[in-house]
Length: 135
Image (tube, rainbow, N blue to C red; front, top):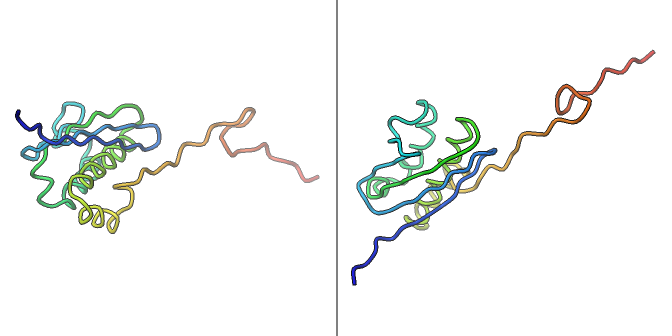
């Protein structure tokens, strides 16, 4: 019976964006929603995702990563993809990669759970209140 290549799945979240990454042994190809990383998003968004691959070193060139991301805006999606890829690479690379990620930026492994504050009734913004007259 042939041995199946080890597949690692991980999830990354930021704001309302959710990214699911699948990592399999390969030649360093990264696809986000079926689009190669070099063509996906803006230069800034690509750089955020590439940070995880650069910090992982040689491991980033030995695996193929497929990411499905939905919901949210561009920045939230980029952060969600970055976290999902970071978690998958840390699981594959072990304690050395995990320590490198934590020393560089904790959000490569731990989701940033800050959310947008909901608007309150009768206000123009979430924290805005009507101006009160003193006299």
